[in-house]
Image (cartoon, rainbow, N blue to C red; front, top):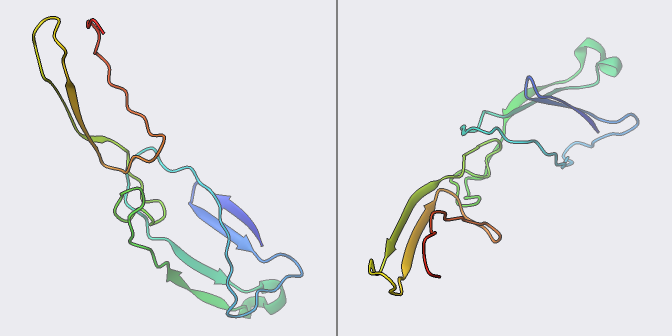
Length: 137
């Protein structure tokens, strides 16, 4: 099959390649990549529709009724409904707390930090805390 993506309309049109046939009941499996929006949004209603080859069957080509996709409601990176296509969230901190064990000059000072995010932080994720200057360390 060959595909054509129209980003303005959010439409992917697939055409069965010349000389090829997809037998009834056969699965068509493929993957493609898109770049998610830079803003949070809920998942759109994604549907599938189709029509048979009109050059072979003419105006009486089979028209497939539209169908909405089934989605997995599992967590992805800790995001509820994260597997639903085009469900987008912006990673952010939910909580950031920092405290010290001693305010006295020249004393050892243990700093404790608590961080909470709205997504899972997988291996390789990094955090940077700034403003820790002015110490003898």
